[in-house]
Image 1 (cartoon, rainbow, N blue to C red):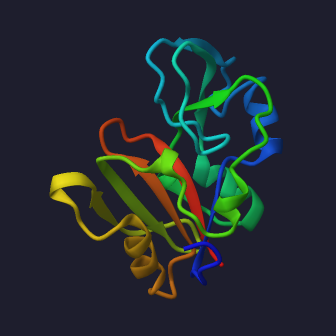
Image 2 (image 1 turned 30 degrees about the vertical axis):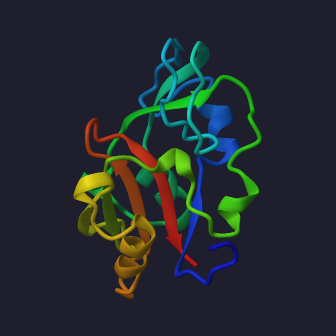
Amino acid sequence: MVGMNRRYEMSAIAPEVLRVLRGHDDAGNAPRIVVDEDGGNPLRCCLGRSKAGETLALVSYAPLRRWAEETGAQPGPYNEVGPVFIHLDDCGGAAPEVAEGVFPEGVRGKHRVLRAYDADGSILGGRLVREGAEATAPIEEELEELYGDPAVAVVHVRAVEFGCFLMATRRS
C-alpha cells in the first residue's frame, strides 16, 4: 500500500511538541520516568513499540488542544488530556513509510476506536475497529470511510482498553 492515494495523512507527535513534553507535559507536570519491564507499549513519538527494559517518559498529552493551536479550532469539552509513552530523547520520529501511507504496525491492536472531529474541533462520531477473530474491516478502510464525510478534518486512533491516544490522522 506504499504510495496509495489516501484521504488522510498519519503522524506521530511533532518533534517540537515532544521537546516541550519532555520538560513538562500538557497537565503541567514533569514527565514520569518509567522502565518498561515487558516492552510492547505504543510510543507516540515514533509510532513503534517499546523494547523490554527500555526507559521511557510517561506524559500527559492533549492532542486536540495541540491541533487547535495550529488550526484555530475550538474543541471546548472535547479537549482531553491523557497519558502517552514517549522516548526520553529524540528517536527520529515515525518511519518514512508512514509518510508514504503505510499504516504503522505499532499502532495496531486488538481493539481500536477511531474518533472523527470537524474543523471546529467538535466530535462527529467514531468507530470501533477489531482485529483478530472478531475482525471488522481493516483500520485503513475504516479511516477511508470516515474521511468520505467531507466534514471530517481529523481522526484520532485510540486504544479501547485504556482510552489512550495512539495517533493523529488529518485530511490530506
